Picture 1 (cartoon, rainbow, N blue to C red):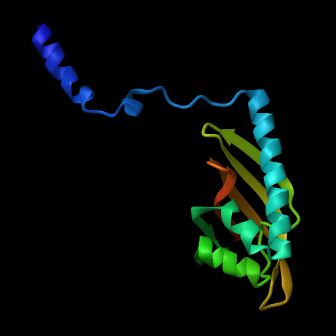
Picture 2 (cartoon, rainbow, N blue to C red):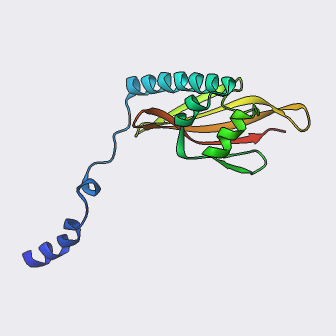
Picture 3 (cartoon, helix red, strand yellow):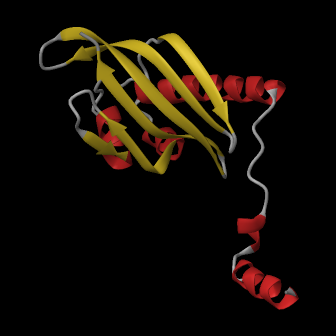
Amino acid sequence: MHRRTLLAGLPLLALPPEALAHPPRQPDSAEAKKFIQEVTDFRTKLAKAVLAKDFAALRPLYADSFTHTHGSGKLDNKDARLVSAMAGEPLIEAAPATELSFRVFAGPTVIVTGKSPILNVKEQKTYDFRWVCVYVTAQDGWQLAVSQATRLS
C-alpha cells in the first residue's frame, strides 16, 4: 500500500518548486488602494509622454508583448503603438477619461475601464470610446500590457 502511494507521488517530484508554491495572494484593501494610486500616477506619466511625443520615456512604459485592439478590430503591437504616438495620433492613453473603474488582482495587476472622446482623424469627428487597459508590474515598475477600445454608437 505504501509503495503505491510513493509511486503515485513520483510525478510531483518532477515539477519545479514554483509549481507547488501557493498561488499569489489577492491584495487587501490598503494594498489595492496603493496600487490604484500608483496606476493613476502611471497613467498621468504615460499621457504626458504621449502628448510630448517623448519616445525615450514611452518605450519602457509599454510591455514588450503589448497589444492594442482598435475599435475597427485592427491590432497594434508595441512598435506600432509607439509609431502612432510619435505621429501624434489620438490615443486613449492621452485622452480625457470618465467613468473610470479600477479592479486590482494578484501580481499585482490592475484592470482599468473608462470612457473617452477620441477624434477620428479621417472623418474629423469625435466619437466616444469605451476602453479597457491592463497594467502589470514589471522589474522597473508599472507597464501597460494590453488595451482595447470600442466605439460607442
